Length: 226
Image 1 (cartoon, one colour):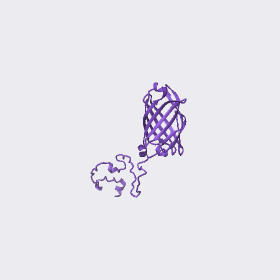
Image 2: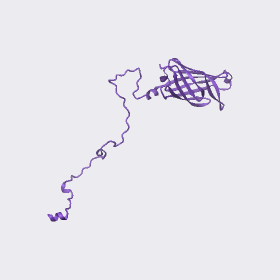
Image 3: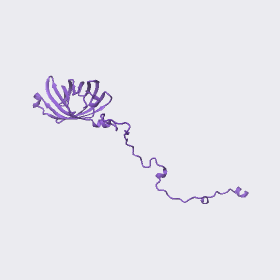
Image 4: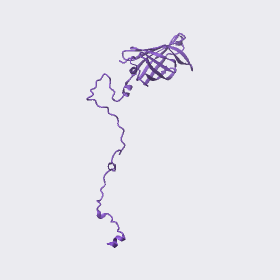
């Protein structure tokens, strides 16, 4: 199973998640819990830098989109930046998941923003799914917790790697391997054919002999010499 200790292979593909945002403390009486849907698609820009196009959909607030930039800065550490996380955040990797260093998050609130402090930890289960729990607080008061289960679809990334992509666990005998067939551009009608092949059916013409050709008229001086 691929783990976060293999960032280039792990943080790729299409990520989809569902969960719930649960209010805590006095907010439980003021704000209803909300269902959360998440989708993110990664694009690698280099061996150590990639972006994630993310969308969060809350049942009571609609959809929020953002672009997150991530960099692999050390064997067990990433760094992420995006508009709603002032200063960014470090991500610490381990075999069973990853954990964010505490970070600030600008949460939409009543037409404005409330900056809350987040503790975010993601756990990888035996099926390869992720379980993300984010605890949000303000001046030390626990306001809400968001929990999500996220599944990763890497099949699109694997097919995009090339027509000849083969899992690493499959051995290939090079003596019998065939080059993958590439789709050929559609040939236009008549392209590359000789004029005879484009002319359609042949039409019979009468045989032309020397007797049928017009004879050149002799000049007057030539006639007098004769």
